[in-house]
Length: 351
Image 1 (tube, rainbow, N blue to C red):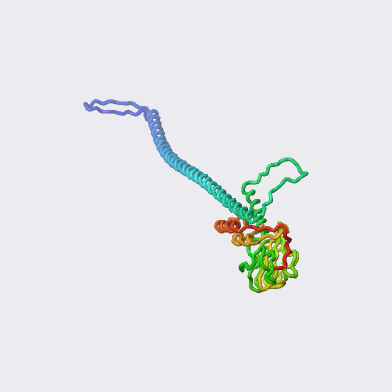
Image 2: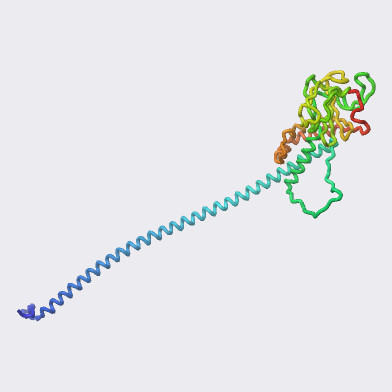
């Protein structure tokens, strides 16, 4: 068998052309052509796959970019909201602090005004407010006090309330005065005499009230005074209650303003049921009328219900009616305080 292949090609003009090919070369060419075709096909498949993967990757990258953009925008929105909330918080805090400061200043001003009114009342009824005086034979380094205005006001309030609690104010019974303090005609023998207190009409058995905080130093039968109670208020003031039907306290008892200390009667040298009420300052009898006319103040302050807590004391002062206080001051100014310096507390037997 021949190793060559003859290929005869006939043209249009019937001319024949013969191509002589070797079988080995033909097989090799066919093999190369087939390999090249396979390589082209495989390359095309690979390229197509790479293009598809690239397209998918591009789509994923695009989607991730979109999510990143959305996440960035959301973060900015959160940041804006946080800034807005912080701004509102700062604004609200500033507003709250301003309102609190205004309220504190207003409250301090009102308390200061109430304290001034109380001090005016105390001065007008003849009570001296003691001022601090340096103690002799003392010393040490000077350390400025760091108390705030509020603390100073509380101390001042405590001091004024203590004075009010221990100052005889108001009426021991509700009845009108039937005999004034001072010179008068004795109701028993008709002679000129000095009346050491005021007589007040009362019903038999009517409750007699303490007019200030203090300590009972006498509760017994005292001759012409009949059943008698004497209370010391620890600040120079003492009060006497005479002609009682009976007394409800004993010597040494601590009493509060408004507490029942006895019942009205007509014991001792008396022409009928009434209460004889005396007021002494530093051992000297004084007219109790001015002090009795502060009844509205004693009710407004509600001293009996004040606890030893500074804030509650301030609230009690704040509850005072300004008009009531001003009316009280007017009443006090209209009544002169009579002090008999040369008369001992128990000189008269005419009550």
